[in-house]
Length: 158
Image (cartoon, rainbow, N blue to C red):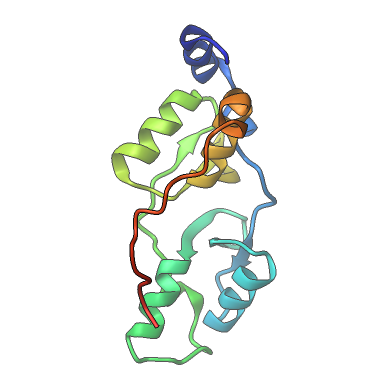
């Protein structure tokens, strides 16, 4: 297992682009809610970015936004996706360290963090991406973990 000093130095040195694991899932501002749902499903993604004509980030739609839409009772899938997107998002420049990205995800309880390079969107880092990054450094420890004991005595739900 790598030493703690080594891990901390990697968090400070590694480029954040190393965290970006998947192709950017994006739609235009003119996309409908149905198209956003289809983009989430077809890409097996938990988010879709909404971009303007110049490819600038306008907002993010996550699974949570889709669930809020369904729960609202207003099921007009032909409405613009911009009506349900989150336009109050936080971004981080790719020159920031992985330590700063981890801190931003943790402090703000974000699941998705858009990464910019000189103001242009280059990708999204998710909490899942960060976990995969950690597994690279702790692979031996993760692969030798004992299975977790069930903490739930009875099944929830249906």
